[in-house]
Length: 384
Image 1: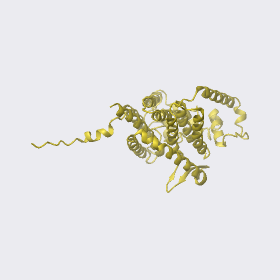
Image 2: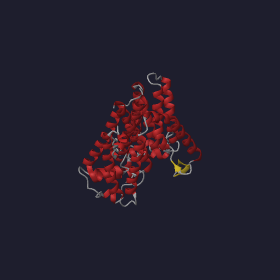
Image 3: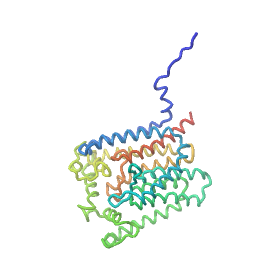
């Protein structure tokens, strides 16, 4: 009697590929992505192909996430040193041979024009997580000193370009790794106190510090103007304060329930600058109001909390540190973008995750989510 061979179904063949995926994380991402597509359709319908391109970028990011999720955390750890070294080398090459646009040298031609600083958003926390994993349970002060060096090198190179927004994102991502690795509060609190006192001093002496002839040694002129505009945007309402003022007007005019989908006057009369990129949150708030803004905030809170839960369950020190840094990076992106649009932070050019238009930012998000998914899968597959 011959045996009967039963061919596996398509789902049975694909199931191992999808097994271990964190579907709660995917749900949170899908909800935010849906909000991003709806908003982009409204604010970008007369902006050429922005809506179509935004959807394409999301599909590309989803593909990257899926591919990276198949890579085990152990293999990701092996990529830390070469990726970080490549990123730093490209930053040095950019400093020496880069392309300058509008006074900033941020791009490098390697056959195609790239922005090497984007690599360091991923490579820096990856490298620091690898460093502390190698010293698990025996990290000393000298190890933390080396970690600070690994963080400050790309931060200073990117700040030199200058690119304050990206340099701060790189710094914050690396700082989260150092914090989760056991940085003492005795070292953190003095810095926070000094920062608070410094901000207070700047506010108290605003009139003197913001005079045109006053030179801020540690900041360039355009960075000085951003801080002064934050303190009082009404001093230059049609110039440097225009972005901030129009963003606040749009947010306030949305009221409780908003003006309605595609009915934002500040948005569609083009008072909001960069309405598809950095200031898309103002357009969103105008059309969907406080209710929509709270829903968006809850979406980010869900994403961050779920990501931190994945970090807490990571199978290794490397996985926990990397996942923790990625989780808090989502917080940094959202907080800085919403803060600068709302007038509580300087305008530094940080996109709102899943909402703002931008191919490079979406690719970075795809990589980050893929790493998170890889860590979640490794834990689930070990338990099964």
